Length: 117
Length: 112
Image 1 (cartoon, chains in turn blue, yellow):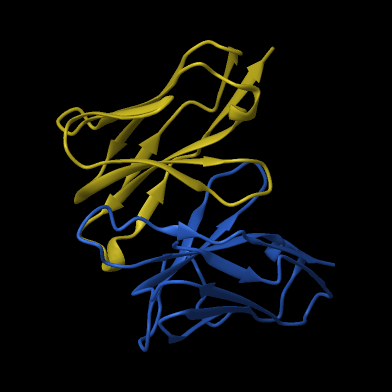
Image 2 (cartoon, each protein chain N blue to C red):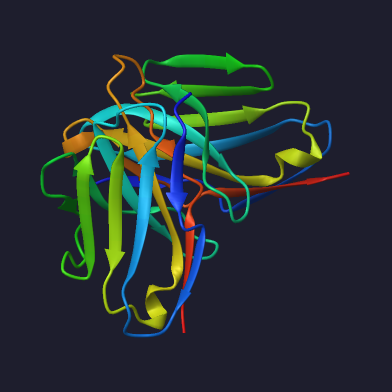
């Protein structure tokens, strides 16, 4: 149980185009979804927290107009990287959690590797 | 804000034991997690501590001291497949959604 999927697993795009990444919780309803970015040999950096039906909460330094997050249902959140540039090339990972009364751990998706040419 | 420190790299021999330390400073501690991450893959959950003491799970154990802002992950009977990055993450109970802040990760290399 508690499986999270991401699509696509990798994408290559031209500079200036937009890319949409989907994150789905397959066998549970996620109260909260998180989006992270990870550069090579670095740790995960939280970009934003999103709850179904409400606006995402962005971390300091993350441009909300560039990284659009939509959390339309309890099982789906999307991250759109608008006008992508080479410096946006990174490993994007989503996670989802639900209230269990216990650890409320985050379950991670397999990640999406974005390469902007 | 939160500050989480862990060593960058550690090397150990197959069959041995390795202890990865993590120190943290946080304003609203609500649990500490350890994750394992192989290169190019997403993190996988290893352990969770919210109260002081030791949590044992097979070859992996995790310890927490809240008063010292300190945790460690103990890996016993090391296997080659344990070569990975180990991430310490602290949950902020005061933040929206109980977000996690990750340390820089410790790359463990297991040698034959």
